[in-house]
Image (cartoon, rainbow, N blue to C red; front, top):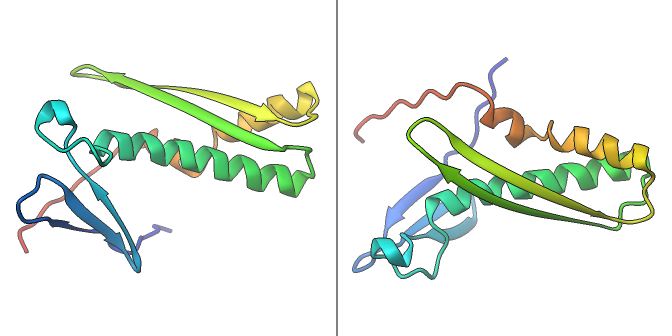
Length: 132
């Protein structure tokens, strides 16, 4: 069964390269990087994509560790990307805090690679666009 999401809305900000984004009652912004003519004060769209995987990884690991009663005290995720015409490469480094056994760490790494956004990013994407 297909899942649908609530619509993410975007709106330009007059006199700025920044955009305001919203979902339900939440608001955030994005902009071009300073090297591309933006203010550099807000994340650019690639930063938002990368941060989505970071957040999903941390949240997934926290929920799983709680359910399994693992002694996970903290999770830190660092992610960098590079891209060429054919591939968008993400390199993710996960640091786990707590008195975890090697088996628990291995299990958490397996779960990190199964977080919902990680799985979504491995799917084929189809984008349709229409004028409103």
